[in-house]
Length: 250
Image (cartoon, rainbow, N blue to C red; front, side, top):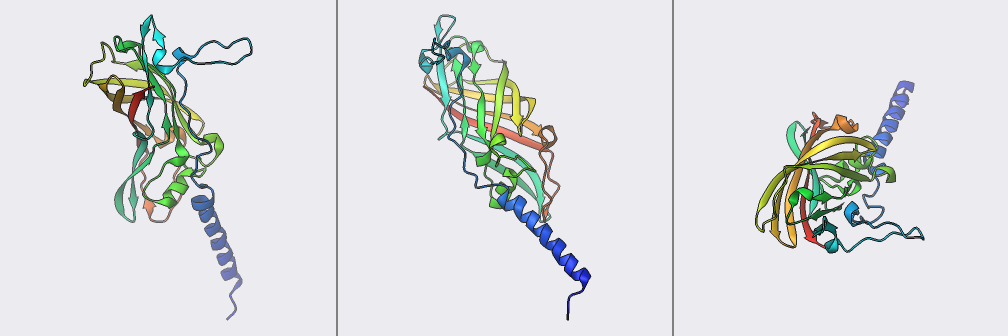
């Protein structure tokens, strides 16, 4: 039996819809490979003026000084650190807690052991393209234009420019844990919003600091959409973002 005109039109519509679905969830997301290797952002206190030729140099991280007191620069160790997000969804009718992680995070902090209030933190940079969950299809969707658009070079990186640190004072003691907050301008998909992180950091010893920085944002803040996906529903607007870090003296 010959297929009716209506049947042919329906088949074409379904084919176009299927192609669009495949594009969003497979091709648009790209491979997930970073464009370039992350480099550690510079600290303002370690940057020296440019010379007559226009080139610039920086002091050795552990030789930086603040107010005449030697301070130490601690650099995030990517092999021991990770950035992550957490969000809830309903998958196939059941609640699911989704966690995405990456070790592609860079930054450093300048600490005067005798005066923690003078702490300086560089930009913190995360390669959003390398975030992975338990689903390759979800990962590709995240890299697509509807969600993070990290498959594009323009929005590959997420950046936090720290503007203030509150609640940190006194001297650094080995083995002690410090609770404080960090506020900064967080940029995702080219959209910048102020976000405050709760931080718990432990001075392991004179050469190592480890801790957790955590905050809650919403998808609406950064215009992060959710593609229409079969079997996925009720994705929360709230997203937890966190950085588990180990920073070592340079």
